[in-house]
Image (cartoon, rainbow, N blue to C red):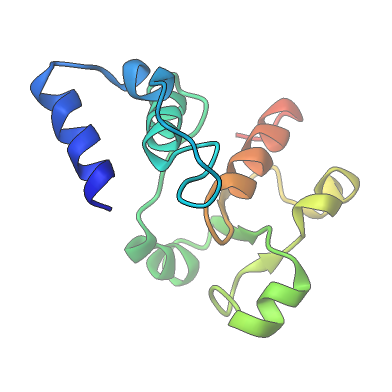
Length: 137
């Protein structure tokens, strides 16, 4: 954690931008770090938002979207085993695993807002791109 705080604070002090975070070459050693460092991943996620490839929703707003905004579908793209182990995201969430999404697009309404969620955000990003490429907003 300290290493990442140091990297981000150095980037801020140096006037770096989101694109710079995504492209940073950081030390990689399998026992202590991943090939895709969380700092790089944060930069890439911010790039996607800034480029308009995805829109974000705060987790604390999901319940309201589910119950008060009837024009919204919450799509959970986790695997059934994850849901069985960790529980449903929300009682109203529709579960279509990412691996099945392309074959089940007809189950999704095209006249409602769709908010996608998963465990970490990566599958939700892929699902967002799949829906976008198939004409969903």
